[in-house]
Image (cartoon, rainbow, N blue to C red; front, side, top):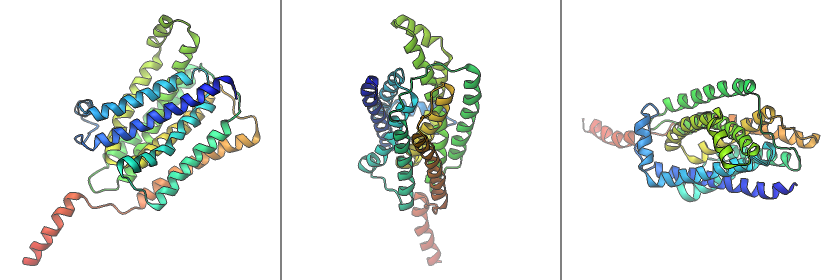
Length: 320
């Protein structure tokens, strides 16, 4: 392990802990925020910005992203990203303790598979010793980013469009989580590109000028705003223990594959570690597919309004 790793890996752990704790704090705050509608952007933003609890969670997320940007300047993606993705293990625990959420038996197995996939990716990255890449060609970046953002937004928005009180929120969580994971994966690519500016300039003025003139700054802002609005709407309707792991694992697997290629970082040289890398990515995909089937197969719970109306309606029928 390099000397930089002794500082980089703990910083990456701090980043993922702050980020995922912020998500759980936001979920708790969303329970007291009026229903978010993606088409009513200004109203949704106003509802979020007037909630102090939500702003506290958002501040934790920003702190995590800031730590992630710093650590990517001196560690390769193959080392950092598995550590960042390990936060998926924290989410079910925090959701159970802070939100009192419960998972079904099949859902627990699927989320556990996602967690194991993260562990495999982390083990495959240990000891690779590769150098961190900072520059990618604009053409390949655009070819990857544009379809990814379109597919992610379509998937997340399509999942939210079908949500309604009393319907299968788990299915909405899987679709919205996968869609926002793609968008956040693109945002991570932008962060990685911006980290090259930090590595290439020695003065604060040079860094500020380079960041302000970079298109990746505005790509990052657009992806974060779009992903945040879609994710918050999904988080309000679904269990955090479903949507967060799906979003994190999707974004992490996407980022590891895309960034390793775009930034010319080397795959593990050892056949064993390469096998673990491929097994982790495959298990993540299988876990997402199985979780989506679990969600689709669950009977739709009855809406609260239906539960309140039905007994009175039946009583009226009996009296007649």
